[in-house]
Length: 280
Ligand code: MG
Image (cartoon, rainbow, N blue to C red):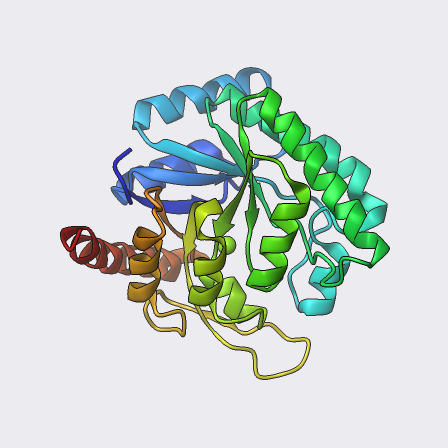
């Protein structure tokens, strides 16, 4: 792929092949693919998916891990249910993560990504060491497959994320930087956080949002360019810190409006990219 090629976050739903055709119709050259259900990860469905990817010419830049039982309704729910942080589901989820890594390797994809959950802010919290260990286990499994493991941002501050990366201490640990999540979760100004962890950024979500106004509630996601990220400055900063990966659009609504917003985001990003790359 070319530097800063446009991408889209593609949930696979019930029919990954149909989703791929929709991305093809949008003339978007890359996707981040949500991990499908177990049925699609092996055998004939996997072979069909591989053939469809090849036929469309779309590059899959990462496979996103998701787990049954995760819910994003509000901040306490996210704390309780998301990623590798909740102890009760951790072992099962680590196993599914390995299957997702295998699946990604079958597709020739060199990374997996995940919302790891709310990492405790205080490293002295006993839960902190457990999450560090879980991340190390994923990194070590991915390393054997020639893959990196990318942490989706948002649920922690830039400082916390930087310390966590240092404590996990694995060269194949990277970041999928979603600036809108920092706003939606009230985790701090995203561009400052990007400057802090810039060298670790291997993927991004181009998404926009507005700060939360009530305790424990998330802020509101809005179409790209209409929120408080400062999307032009975001892309400029990515370029400045040396990021050359895809600009992957994420719009977490569905239906016709999602398609319209993605197409508008693509146009916006193409304009910004021309300016940023043109300026060297
Ligand atoms: Mg995201």
